[in-house]
Structure formats: structure tokens, C-alpha cells
Image (cartoon, rainbow, N blue to C red; front, top):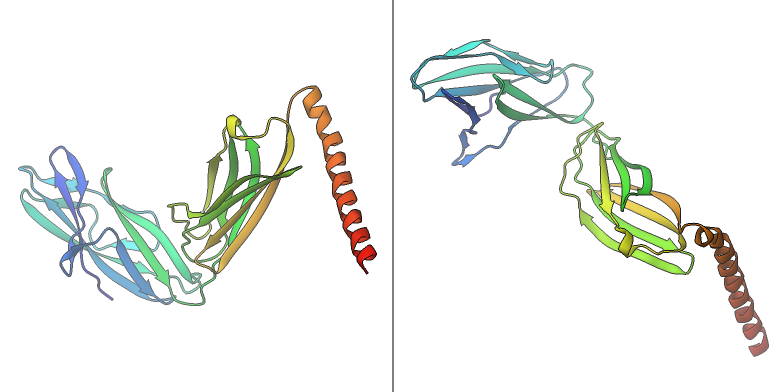
Length: 254
């Protein structure tokens, strides 16, 4: 399988990346797809617009990649096309895999490889805590496909809801096996001064992956913090009393 080349423009002062056009448009990355056990091929084009030859060592972030020539010397005002192959191991897990090709220290071309087979979208929300004016948490991709997570936030205090943020995209891509630590701003001025609050985070991705996690924190200092358990007991008693009154009213009507 051969895909269109990606070009890296090299200058005498350094390196800069420029994807080669594909059907009239530029490619931001290399995309390859195949089942386990196959060999996929592509070409990396290195262009030197300067007046001196440039010698560069090529490397990849994954051991599956092999270059036909390495290192490569690009004459002045010349382009060098370097074929490379990606050998998908027979036991490679299906799904999306990400990596990169590097020319020297400054030029990077992202690579996305999709290995055929059943795809699993799985996501977890972990390590939720409220600290320092924010709700901290981690998202972990437990599946084998790239996820674009969305997040909804809700917080409930002793006497009702104190925070609600509808579901929205997080503007990040989470590769298989990747873990990312994030924070949702919740400054002190927006939080209750005295309360016991349970925060719930609901994350989704692509409609198939869903996860949720909670954390509880008591707000208040000194006597105020000590009063929270009393408030909690009072809130429970009020709820019980209201329910009992409702049952009594229904019994009287009957």
C-alpha cells in the first residue's frame, strides 16, 4: 500500500514542516490502514531550499517503522524522496495507533495507523478532587480507538444544586491507553461558603464510551465546618418530615 508523500522543508537555519498536497489539499499527517501482519508503505519528501547540503537522521517513535535510507543528505535546492515502511505486527491490537516521524531535531510529521479488527471505545474518569479553585480529574482511554471526549459537570449541596455545566467538547484527542489530567475551574467566589458538596463528572465519547465519577468535599472553616454535619442531619430530618407529611395527606384524602 502506497500513500502520497509528505514533504518537510529544510532551511539553512533550521527545519520547518510542510505537508505535501493530496488531491489539491495539504495533509496534516500521514494516515495508514491495514490488518495485522501487513507491510504499509509511504514516502517522506525532504526539500532543501538553501545553498548548502543538509544531512539529517530520520527516526520514528514506533519500532514498526523502517526507512529505506538513513541518514539522508539533501543537496541544495533539491528534494529527496525517502521511502519508508510500517510493518504491522501479527499480534497488533486493532484500533488506532499514533506516532511521528522526525527529520533532525525540528521537523515532525504525525502518523496515524489504523489496525483492522473489532474496535472498542472505552473511557474512565478517575482521581476526581476539589482543590485550589478547581475540580481536578483524569480521563483514561481504556479502548483501542482514538476518542474525542465530552464532559458535563454537576454539583449537589445539602440543600440543592450548586453547579451545573452542560455537556461540551473538551477539544482534545485521547489515544488508546493515554491518560490526561485536567482541571475544571470552580473559583472560591462561585462555591458555597458552608456546605457539603458532591461533584459528579459525566464523560462521553462518540456515543459509545460513557463514564462517571464523583468526589465530595466539605466547605467551611472552624465552627462553620463543624456545623456542616448538623446541617446535614437537619436537611435529612426536613426531607423525612416532608415525605411523612405527603404520605399523611394522601392517606387523609383516601
